[in-house]
Image 1: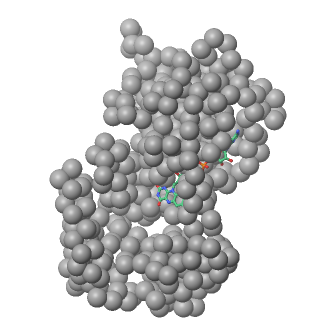
Image 2: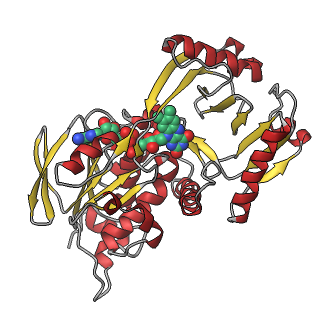
Image 3: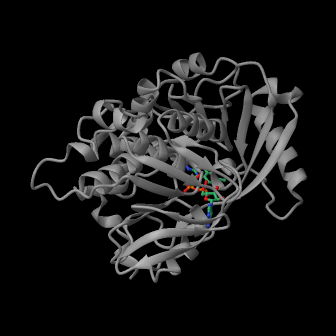
Length: 390
Ligand SMILES: Cc1cc2nc3c(=O)[nH]c(=O)nc-3n(C[C@H](O)[C@H](O)[C@H](O)COP(=O)(O)OP(=O)(O)OC[C@H]3O[C@@H](n4cnc5c(N)ncnc54)[C@H](O)[C@@H]3O)c2cc1C
């Protein structure tokens, strides 16, 4: 008897509870083929996670992998900036933990750095604010601590910090190179049997009752047992085409990438007027929220000013060059929170649309796989169901 690669993965895959190992009486659907629409960070992480569960996955991307918002992202992996809403904070903390898990699972193959994030403030009032946030998330069980000025300088020996009124280290946070991470995850998914097709745009669905039978694409129809909408801004129109509301709003952000520089920063850094990280391949990424920023001026000028601002804190960057300026538009659901779960009455159409998807991708992919393959709803996703917009 011969078994093909998919059967092998089904039988001997990483997790024992694949769709093929459903217990008697357990209401899990049998899914052979899942189409994931979108090749951003969500689509790539979903593809890898589902393929690892032994499912045949096809990713359809209308342009190229990571060509959407993911390629425009700062890609800070964190829950510390989500300190206003406890359930959302917890979901993001699970996202950060998910990157640690994936990095172990893939034996360090991902261009992800998880060495921590540092914040400091020069004025006492602002220092009190970061301490108050720290205390709140510590009370929620999150990992972070105050650090003194000596420790700050030891962690950032080449930085010109100015006066330090207070500093905080979130040691489990980090950042990733979003484009390279998407590529790495899609490569891993392909090794597990997934197919990644681009440019192929999904233009609609062939619906039968409360199920989608096939997706219509620029390359013809593709049958699917289930479909996941991970199309970022494109998800709104796709959902609308099957009568499901998925309202998104627009929010812009500007950041620069420098040319590749010698290694300087192992951690993500937030000083008073500076947000900066260095990706594993050497380029720095710094965002446009700095003192004296002028959102009205041409992009090139804004980029140059972001670099000059960064060089005030890190003089090594005086010799750096702006490699690109990115004006990105966040995928922001109307109420600011993720939209995750089955779409309307459809039992085989699943939506994953959110801001902070870089942080959230591993946990949302794991939960989506569980809900799709095991039929077990995850209760911490209850506030985030698409039905709240119905
Ligand atoms: C400036 C900025 C900074 C950010 N900083 C952070 C941060 O520090 N940390 C963090 O966690 N998040 C951050 N984000 C948010 C994060 O980048 C996004 O939430 C995330 O990249 C969205 O990923 P996605 O896979 O959902 O969407 P996308 O990356 O947009 O991927 C969707 C893909 O679907 C494709 N597509 C669309 N329609 C179709 C169709 N009909 N058929 C086929 N393919 C289709 C698109 O081409 C696209 O490639 C930031 C965003 C911006 C703009």
